[in-house]
Amino acid sequence: MQYKSQAVAMPYFIAAIGLFVGQIIFGLIMGLQYIIGDFLFPAIPFNIARMVHTNLLIVWLLFGFMGAAYYMVPEEAETELASPKLALGLFWIFLVAGALTIVGYLLVPYETLAEMTGNNILATMGREFLEQPLITKVGIVVVVLGFLFNISLTVLKGRKTAVSMVLLLGLWGLAIFFLFSFYNPDNLVRDKFYWWWVVHLWVEGVWELIMAALLAFVLIKVTGVDREVIEKWLYVIITLALVTGIIGTGHHYFWIGAPEYWQWWGSIFSALEPLPFFAMTVFAFNMVNRRRREHPNKAAVLWALGTGVMAFLGAGVWGFLHTLAPVNYFTHGSQITAAHGHMAFYGAYVMVVLTIISYAMPILRGRAANPERAQVLEMWAFWLMTVGMVFITLFLTAAGILQVWLQRVSDTPMSYMATQDQLMLFYWMREWAGVMFFVGLLCYLVSFFVKGGTATPARA
Amino acid sequence: MSGVFTKAMARNIFYGGSVFFFLLFLALTFDTERELPNRDNRAELTESAKAGKHIWETRNCIGCHTLLGEGAYFAPELGNVYERRGPEFIKAWIQAQPTGAPGRRQMPQFHLTDEELDELVAFFKYTNGINTANWPPNIEG
Image (cartoon, rainbow over all chains, first blue to last red; front, side, top):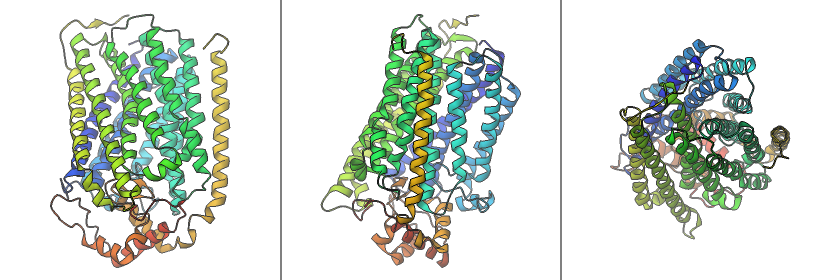
């Protein structure tokens, strides 16, 4: 590691992985609840499990992004982090606040939690993905602002590279658009309209900047390709991301009461949203093919290539499948949406965070790369998780097609619950694919503890 | 990616393009706000319906159900439930939960008062009247 202060990234990465495990356990619980409806009821009703599943995802990705920034920014800026102490303090605040929130979800009835935490002063809770109590939301803002202050100051006092500028822009965007989570008008249409300013402008907007910056950083390191070339690609990719993604928000405005011209704007621009992900895939493979060195960390290279491909499939292809308004009319809010959500989040954001962890963690532990055996196990984890996710997506897609047909297309539409009974075969297969994913995750955990063989010593 | 196309050009296109499309997005948002009074059924957004939305949120209904197609996919769409089931059925159904039928999906008992049930129904009535461009395709949601 080139700068001492990069070490603060380590606890962030460890917390991210820990919360990831929790997320998957709750995913398996919910998958089973889809089949055995009363599983764990009333101890953990589905809505609580889902809130834990999605909120853990968001929080661990934020831990991953912050860890990534603390690792990357000193190296990019060629200077120590402005305040490692602040970074460490914020880590504990964020971890404790996050843990308390999850414990609150699990142990306190949601309406009581809302009353206890000031939801009657400013009602922000009970909206998908933004279920956090007001005090948690305020806590997130405080932590993120402290974090942004820290890394912005570091960039300002050091070298300014395209990678760090794009990363900063993405992270500032993340903070700014999160502020819309405090806006919850009584008018449901307006509520939904601006809710997407957090959700869509995060995952199909500024997060893509973060993802591209992380990927560019790792590719610079593992391929040794000239920074000028990689940064030019970076700008092209994020141009495609925002030019398509901002107006692409319109694909969420088809059926929520917004004017119908959004069907045109949303369909056309979101049909182009696969382009940045396609560019990322081409970019990653191109750079690895043109590599000027053989980096000893093969696992990190595999993750970097994988994230491009899986993001293109999950966000790009599976997004396109149901984004055109005439198609979406039938698929909106079905298992097809769930299929897309799973592969897109895994391919784009889970994998890119695992990419930077895979690259940085060995260095933080004092070696350029892990021992051969550890890397082999990590690559097993890559394949098990990735193939597991492909199957989850395929089975949910099959369930979705059948659901849409029985409930919405057929001349004699079935009720929602009657339709669900017809999907059980696919829900079982999805659950087993989830088990496969979990086995991959366990391999991933174990890979951190595999010793032996010859570790590649750290350079310098 | 020839030598003619430089990093500085790529950067400028990024900033220019992003600003342009964000401004376009703001303009469309402005126009949307102008159009909404004709579509969003604000006439039925009564105090009672507002209170109903608060109940909807504080019981985390979106954690199982969809509302205008958004939410979780574990339980039926409720944007049009007012039309599909009617007010009395909705109230009776909520009061009867959980069914306790073995192996079936269970909805928690929320102990809502009669007044709260009426407010929730007012919220569903308001939601049902939003112009959603004919979505969902049929009454089953």
